[in-house]
Length: 108
Image (cartoon, rainbow, N blue to C red; front, side, top):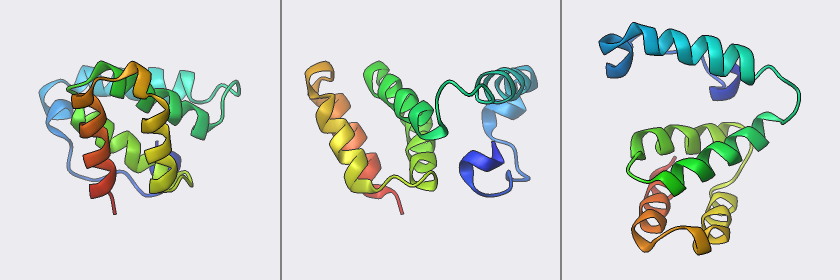
């Protein structure tokens, strides 16, 4: 996970980690240890897939913000992320498009 975010994990745990340590363990062991270590997709490809799914689901702005930030850490530009949102226009309603674009505009 530190390789994806390009920095050490924060000492303070997020609310979901405090509420349910089991979920945190599952995410780290299954997603990052099992799935992300497979060599089928690159980190960039996995993040594009993840943010596409999150945008399609909608109403998951904190997760979308985190994964869009990871995309920047993995070498994508904000312009490229905007193009991704535009490429999904056929599959996203206006609310989901606007939400993703606002998050991208707020990224550092």
